[in-house]
Image (cartoon, rainbow, N blue to C red; front, side, top):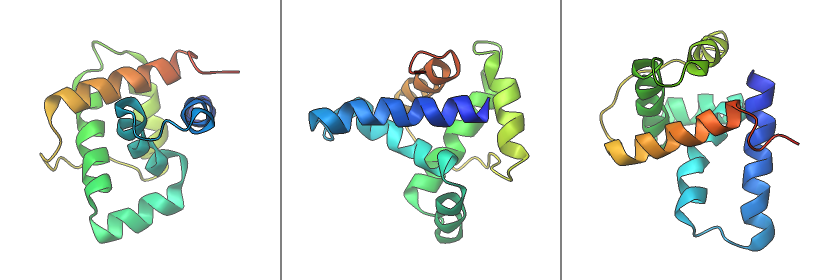
Length: 115
């Protein structure tokens, strides 16, 4: 599941970069997933308690609270926890952003960007 997520993320991002559309909203909200696909970056951002890290923590908490809506999140969160990427609520990310990021993560897990 982790590999599917990572490859889907890269395919998704590639679409925006190939079109030169790095200013689009959907591209910007997806950048938080860099911390999932690159564990070294996650640990660096965690040590700095960066805004991106805090956004990811809020998102992971949101995902955990919404497993009933997105059942694949349960197994995915387990794979992240095995990599020491765990939720720690910060309360910094607006609800509408979390909802859009969760929908996007769900699309990745449902192979919408799988090639």
